[in-house]
Length: 68
Image (cartoon, rainbow, N blue to C red; front, side, top):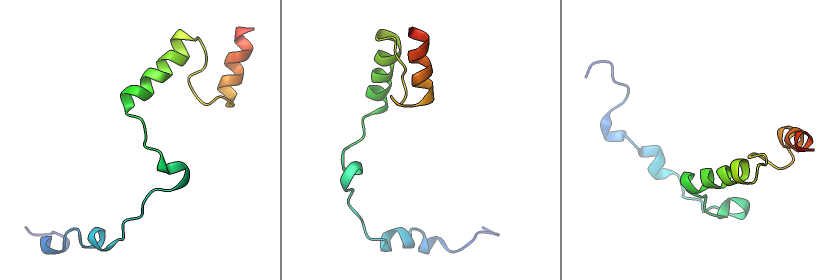
């Protein structure tokens, strides 16, 4: 293969040398699957009629103002 950068025998060398670091703190909780995440957003937006994003964002405040 002309024009290839590096040999294929060295592929993945850096990743194998990098130590594995476990997730800690806020990131230690496992993320929800996209299906469950979108289901919660659907409930917030459609069923409850609220804002689907972060609670203290500008969009949430605007949506709250419109409901009044």
